[in-house]
Image (cartoon, rainbow, N blue to C red; front, side, top):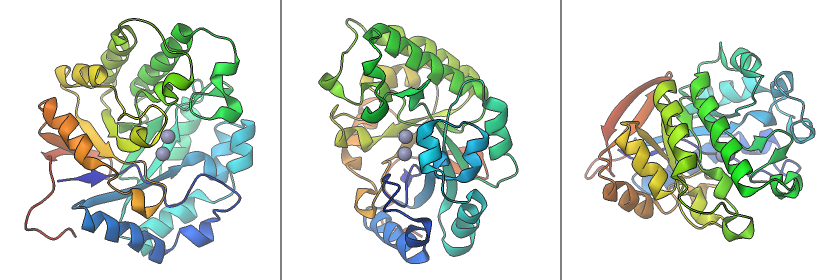
Length: 284
Ligand SMILES: [Zn+2]
Ligand SMILES: [Zn+2]
């Protein structure tokens, strides 16, 4: 089984990506065709929660106000009625707003919820317009806070999958990096993940970013394996061509760690399936 769950049906630029142009059966079919070509049977979508007006009940950051244009129930209905894709959402972890996020998520029939830490307060680890690195905080402080929030996200119980789990490294050498053994950041986060029970995403999106490596780092992934936490596999595609992006690298990465199973989700229930492209069986 190969999965691609953390998938967006459109690029992030809000101005050029209206729902009516991208939430169409024809667009979903383009993603499905690429997935089939690449042996990926389990395909789902996870649009950013902040692209929906309902997200402003959770948080009202300027960026969210700029992005919140579409209706969440229309999105869910579109995926269920006009596609055969799994229904997911990429929901941010906003500390102190867990109840509000739970209200938004509850009562909608997700196959899975992908949880992300993009913002650390008002500034973001992956978006230069609100760059966390302009605050003058030390790399140790930024990284420590990022991984604390990742752990809290896991403990919140809101999420089935923790997305791009070491996103704080996205800029690579383009931003300050902490010195020494980075496991001092990973270890407490992995402990929280064990307790919280979410799966950890292996994302090939990092290979397209300045850092040029998968999320999470090998040392982080090794701790995840040691802790017995399952992985979910995704590309974070924003266009059809990115489906299954550089999965050969991800599979080699997982094989090297001795990982043989991958998490599969349906109706927010998780099971494990043997990892790898199906041979001789047409993807559905
Ligand atoms: Zn993300
Ligand atoms: Zn994403």
